[in-house]
Every structure is written in C-alpha cells, then in structure tokens.
Amino acid sequence: MTPVRTRFAPSPTGRIHLGNLRIAVFNHLFTRHHGGAFVLRIEDTDAGRTRPGALEQILDDLRWAGIEWDEGPDIGGPYGPYRQSEREALHRTAAERLLAEGRAYRCDCSDERIEVARSDPDFQGPGCPGGCRDQRKEVGTIRFAVPDDEVEIVDAIRGEVRFHGRDVGDFVLLRADGRPTYNLAVVVDDIAMEITHVIRGAGHLSNTPKHHLLFEALGAVPPVFAHLPTVLGDDRKKLSKRADSASVGELRDRGFHPDGVVNYLSLLGWSPGDDREVLTREELIESLTLERVGASDTVFDPEKLLWCSEQHIQQMPVDELVEALRPHLPEGISDTRLPLLVDALRTRLRTFDDIRDAIELIDPPATVLAEGWGEIRREGAEGIVHEIREELAALEAFEAEEIGQCIRKRGKEIGARGPGLFHPVRLALMGTRSGPDMGKVMAALGREKVLARLTGPSDPP
Ligand code: GLU
Image (cartoon, rainbow, N blue to C red):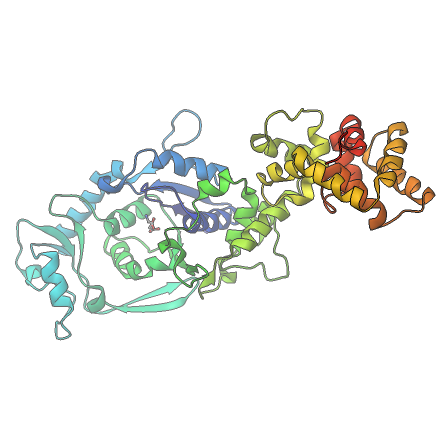
C-alpha cells in the first residue's frame, strides 16, 4: 500500500483563521493516524497578495497548535515549508508539455469575452468563444482543453460527484505573462510531492474536476479527494467569509488551550462515533478516519470552543498548568505561591488568560473588601469572622484541608454553619459570598494576608 501523503497549502495573505486551521488539523490527524507524511506548502504565487510577515505567522500558529510538518527544504534545524513561488519552472514545463501534446492551446480571448459567452445558454462546448483551440496561436494564455464529456469524481466524503466538461470550461494554466495559475500549480506540486489524499474545504469542490483532468493529462493517478463540510457562523454565513471570524493568533493571545482548539475543530464535521467529545491528541489520532466525516454543513459554536479549552485545561497536571499560565500572570506573583494559586483557581479557567480575573477575584481592590465588611456589619456577623480569625491564627499547618476543617470545627463550637458561617468569612476574605474553595484560597493567599482581611478595616465605612 502506498504510504499516505497529505499537504496543507495556505496562502500567505494574512493570519490563518480557524477555518484554515481546521483543514490543517484534519490533514494532520489523518496523516498521523496512517503513519504517513504531512507536507506544508505555501501557495505564494500571487505576489500581489502576499503579506510580509504572514508566512512567519502561519508557521508560528501551526507550531502553537502542535501541527508539525514532516519535510521541506532543510533550513538548519527544522524543515522550512515548500514555497510554490520557487517551483514556477516546473509548473511552466508542465503547461508547455500539455501544449505540445495538444491537450492545451494558446488563447487570446479576453476574460470578459469568455464570461459573456459562457453566460449565453446557447453557447456550446467547453472551448473558448474565439475558437482558439483549432487555430494554433503563438501568443496568449495557455488554456487546458477540457473534454466535452462527463467528469466523475469519487469524493471520500461525498461519494460520486459528476460534472460536465461544458460547465467546467477550458481553463487557464499559464497566464499571458507566463505566470502559472493556482489550478496548474496545485496539481503539478501535488504530483511532484506524491500527495495521496487532498483534504480541503468544500469550497474547492468546483475546482476538483479541473484538477482531476489535469492529473490524468499529466499521466498521474489522481489522489483521493475529500472535501470537508462547510463551517457556518451562527448567522448561517460561511465562517471563512466573515470578517470577524477569529484568527488563530487571537485565540493564542487569549490563552486558549491549543489541544482544546484542535479537539474542537476536529468535531466540526467529524465525531468519534461514541459519546466522547473531549479527546486528547493521541485519542484524536487514533480515532480520526474519513469514514466518520459527514457531508452536511456544520455550525461554529464559540461557547463550545471555550468549553473544549476548559476541559483540556482542567485535565492538565499542576506543574504543566503553572508553566502554561506564566505568560498570562500579572506582575509580582511569587514562584512559591504559584502552585497554590493554581490549585485554588484552576476550576475557574476556561482559557489561560482567565487567571487574571481569577486572581483579581481573590485579590480584589480595597474598596471591594470594605464593602464586604459593610455587609458583615449590617448582618451583625463580625463576631463569627473574628472567632474564625483567632482559630486560624493558631492553626499549625496553614494548608487547604486543615484550614477547611478548622473553619468548620470553630463554626460548630459557636453554632454557625452553612451560609451563616461561610458567607461572612468569604465576604471578609474576598468581598463576595461565593467563589472558589475557601481553604484553597486561604492557603494560596497565605496566613498573613488572610488574618489581615479577617481583622477588617480599622475605621468602618
Ligand atoms: N491555497 C488554497 C487555499 O488556501 C489551497 C488549495 C488546495 O488545498 O488545493 O484554499
């Protein structure tokens, strides 16, 4: 069996968005599942649309998502991606070969003339309106002569898809100035790179008959095509067409767990066939096959994306979580306190960046703490808070478990329990009535801070 070879072929026109990353994710997981090779090819033939810095960002975003590619020019260390712009000579040779073999022809019809002709229902055949096919012209674009016949493709997701040559129409391979088109470059490169599976968005389905015909004309076996279902936004518009669709860089800055993002994207059109929704990367690799990809459109759900990120964060071992949180921490958090803080606050994290709000919750501004004490006084609960303070001052091991037990024990002695006990203490500690586990929060804040807060402000507001 030929080893599986796939490619991800982004254009460096800007930051990749979630829709692009999803294509990379499916290709990558599928390839790993089969132990094949995953190729990264930058489609940068349109110099006018290439944005400086975009290539570096694409590479950064892919690395962040844990999508590494297997080959490419050796740039001293990791592989560089293939760049389509460096392969133009190959593309041109292929076009000239097709021209010499009579599978393509020179054409000087303007785009406009072709468009007008094709919109006329009486226009016959795939050829150009100028009849250039038979005229052996010397100049002009090189156009592929599409057979006036059916083109049948078996898509791994959609099954048989039929097109007619008349609807496909003769298409340009090489522009008049000698630049190869996307359709030519993609096929020549897929052949050279021995790509076995082309997994891409459904938007490319209409290009596929052209690609299929080119593969055959160039004497190559067409790859397996698999067109993933379209992702729609909640307004039912295509996600890829929406200006506000999140870029991968944005999610990264906001501290989404990359495995959560990859996991969520894999569920857009695929499911493992059981009730699992949270899957590790290894589990995804093990279970992702094209048979389980559906053909119908799927809807992007930003809440579920957050949820997936949260699930993956909750599964992290503390030491890994501490490291992942580091770039998102406010100034002045000491290394020794960090694991305790993480232990106290991890249940509140949907993204790594949520750590900021969580820290602010247990370390609120003085005004919030003063308001908390205002409520305690109105309820006449100062006594309870001071009793607890006394007990905690004498506690030997100032650790989460012991702190919790100590609060309950003293509460029982003074006849306070449940909200009657915990609300006043929490109000004094954080200025709120609810929040993360109090023993853990106290352990994270440290005895000194806790005792000061349970003492309350010296002059009541
Ligand atoms: N450069 C194309 C894109 O970004 C890839 C086309 C393909 O996969 O064939 O959509």
